[in-house]
Amino acid sequence: MEQFGVLTLGSRLKRLSDHLFIQVQEIYSQCEIPISATYFPILRLLQKTGSLSVMEIADRLHLSHPAVSKQTTKMIKESLLEKTVDEQDQRRSSLQLSELGLSAMQRVEPVLQEMKIILEKMTVYSSENFMDALSILESEVLSGSLADKVLDRLGPIDIVLLETQHEKAFYDLNMAWLERYFPDQIDDKDRKILSNPQQEIIQKGGVVWVAVRKTKTLDSVVGTIAFVPLENDSLNHNKGEVFKLSVAEHAQGGGVAQALLSTAIAFAHQQGFSLLSLETASCLKLARRLYDKNGFVEKEFPTPSLYARADVYMEKSLILKTDRDPS
Image (cartoon, rainbow, N blue to C red; front, side, top):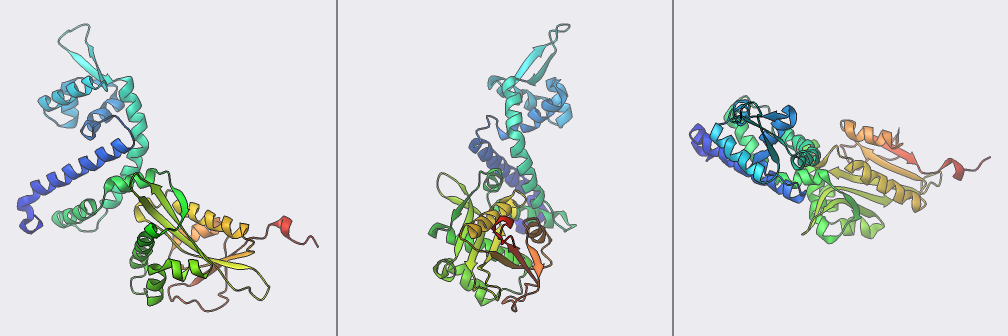
């Protein structure tokens, strides 16, 4: 429809609307929230105001009186709303949320917060032309599952060892990260490691973890991290390195990166490693804050990095004070 420009504006907006309603209903279903996606404006309005008449609801939401009357009748039958008749005028009545309606709106709140984050990311664009912006929004909304993205943020998320079914996601997540931040600095070494983590990491004594949300059919992978042992340094430190830390853009800000990094740190400590290192780039401000918070300290590169994009080298000591020689 895009080829016909503004002449199909209504059809394109309806397509977006229909798709979003279906996706939101899928989220509600997965989270066992007993409301229809079409009920939300009325439920939210009554949650904020307490009680209103059908006419007042129609006026506030700029909807037709018959449309609101039809919708609220359904909601009363589903025990989401209660009707109270005016004692002074039997012809007048008001609607308010029932106990079931109040409970449903409380349960849906965390879902709405995560949905808001995803939708705000989808609607951030620089174009000043509405039709161009609409095309971008359509690409964002229709190209992937809004329901899956929101459910990924709601969790629960498990950190598990990489298995064969996770390898494509390992490649896709890390490649998406490279293409976003360093599109001109992706080399053959990157592709080799990402294409074959079993051979390039695990068979060399390393470990790869993925952050997944378990579904009925498959694992939804939202993050990755890898660890490899290194040769001891001049101080005979038993060293390891963490790398390939990536989190799907829609799942960022929910603690996934911290969970992955904590898993790698705990593993290295349990395996007797005394020093953990990593390489990063100074332009990655959020990553740097994560590493600082977890006790990594910037040092000089012991050897030149294999990656031109890496300009920061950091280390974390895994030797507890009680483990050190008291002398």
